[in-house]
Length: 266
Ligand SMILES: Nc1ncnc2c1ncn2[C@@H]1O[C@H](COP(=O)(O)OP(=O)(O)OP(=O)(O)O)[C@@H](O)[C@H]1O
Ligand SMILES: [Mg+2]
Image: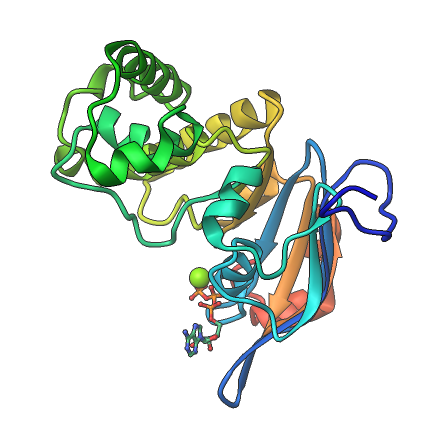
């Protein structure tokens, strides 16, 4: 068996598989025996009230935290214990609930940061501030602009990231995640702070990304967006899975309605 391969079997088309993963902080169990699968080509939503464990789940999938127990397989390989940059290089990218950009760098440069692990020179050049070859620099700029085009920011490549309106900063973060050329994109509340028009646009971008062959997982409170774009929804409450199904099934699930006190899922 090749290094990193496992004897575990997966159903056809499974890209990500979490089995019984648990993470506690002191006495608080933020994620409790959560299991789910994401299939190649899915747009899957993860919803749940504040503090349900959604962001912690992403932190576990991306190697920021190691689960106390349970297994995570990506592309059939066990990824528990791998550092975040290895997981990124394997093809999982994410955005953050709070925008994390380099405001003093240009929009294009922010995207190039996401590309570094794909350049020949890679991190070493970056860390030692060695000059890139002109060919490599030109290639990176071209790639960055092509990536910005996906989110509609190709005209703003030379603007300072910090000067963009908030909605566009969110899109820039998405572009930076795409620059790692992921197989799986994890979005953490991408519509938070966006107006209705921007949220609709974001929905179109999510479809576009999926049509490029990238599988998408979406943590989101905006139920309009969740119901519109996702094919499957996983619902967490107090760290536990309380429901999983199609948006229609979730909407009428009594446990989900109870968790939201009937307010947000209406
Ligand atoms: N580093 C940490 N140390 C201690 N407790 C934490 C830590 N990170 C998260 N928690 C706790 O774990 C629980 C789950 O938090 P998490 O941020 O994952 O929820 P969430 O579903 O993303 O919520 P929101 O919708 O508000 O973003 C919360 O009770 C939170 O306070
Ligand atoms: Mg969160």
